[in-house]
Image 1 (tube, rainbow, N blue to C red):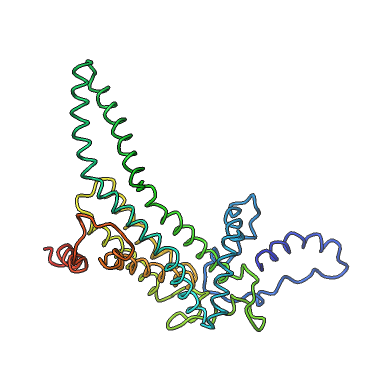
Image 2: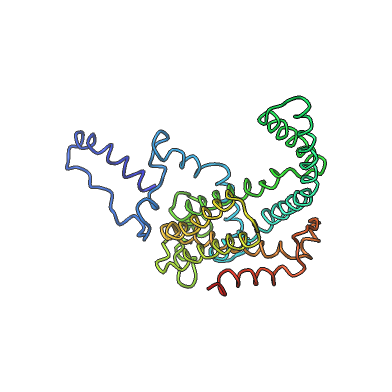
Length: 339
């Protein structure tokens, strides 16, 4: 808001000086602005950029209904729980991850388990279809290209019929991503609005959310609107994200080249998140850390045979009775005992 007033003042000042009978009006005192350790790009309100400017898309996002809805959820959690803001952020993150992403993650494992159980049948169909196409190609004089295209087209149709029969199309396993990623973005933008004063919500005693966040931290980050100068939060976010990637990689044997590239890409993104997290308010980094920790916890929980049975996730050939022991052994063999 201060940035918008400053821009507007610079636009009107020449006209005011021409009309004024006295000396020019003084500039807006800089002491009004709250001191912040954030970089200029993080503090400046995006509303200062017009809809046709480079920040128009972000302004639309920051004032969108989903972001405002998340702001209302955060304010409700803070008011209802009576916790300080660091506790309210943790509570909201745990509640959302537990109520939204955990069921979706269980559903994802349910779909993937059914798809895995179809693989022997798919391989059997592929073997018989390959023989039938070869016979037909010899009878009708098909070229290798025509035979190959016929095989692929028929195989896709048969596999699709299997997915429809068992109601387990692999695309359904991506629902988690399409819900979790927007939720992560909306939460991050809502916390940025709170931390930079881009919202005018008040909680109690006339104090803005930004002012309450400035004293709502804990331990080494008492000011949730400032950066974490110790880099403890950013580095912790990167480490937990890397752990999630490595756990995923350890359970994948014989990954394809595409899966290998994706794994390297996600590793790079996890490392890149460290310097990015070091340039945003601590409130956002605290949310990222809690969200990543919940993701890691859900990953471990969904390995539990009892929990999988509770969620009615079908048994697969790759399931183990001792998943945690096997994971530790794989981790030890890859990162510790390797010479």
